[in-house]
Length: 296
Image (cartoon, rainbow, N blue to C red; front, side, top):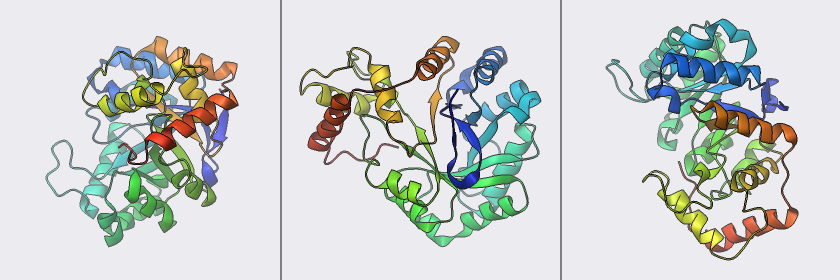
């Protein structure tokens, strides 16, 4: 598995990471097989969140014994579980980080990210101060921001955070010319969520209300006419994504080991995209998507 530096952190991360939102509905055996397969195949970046149900607990139950083989990222800020308090306060941040450490059976985290925090809260500084306190005390090596649009722009401009996690794909290119380049210029590690646009290109219908906007955009872009490479929509999506050198890692979410192995095999063989296809995808998004916001 190819690796990249996570910005200026010095951490080497696999080009593909694994997002752990979807494992919350899975049993321990399924997660153990999935995560151990990922680690065996060279994936070394695991991304979860305090608000992903029992995801953190499953990480602790299944791969805590391999802790030195991967970088572990989580997110905080929301009220979750049985904690009684208010979102986006110092107490909530501190409790969330301490609980994450306990749940995942580790004495440190590689990265703690504020989870879709509005810029009005960021501007107050309270949650940032607590995140910096966690970094200074060794609970986390680095701090990051996970989010999109104007909130992400504030976080990047601030120069406070080590990493940015944001949405980007062939059907969600809003960050392409502004946010990604700015984050890269500041030495931030760039983590991409939803890197294949929920796999909607070429599908006959949206699988859920959550993916409907992705589906609408893909249909609109595909409706312009044939495009080289669209017979392999996942390959086209991955090729488009990894043509952007700013990206450190892209996190994929799955509980299906075969899907995971297929994505790894695709990357290991070498992903590329026809320059004409790349340009066509950019042109179609720019022509159709002047009002398409960055999805979160």
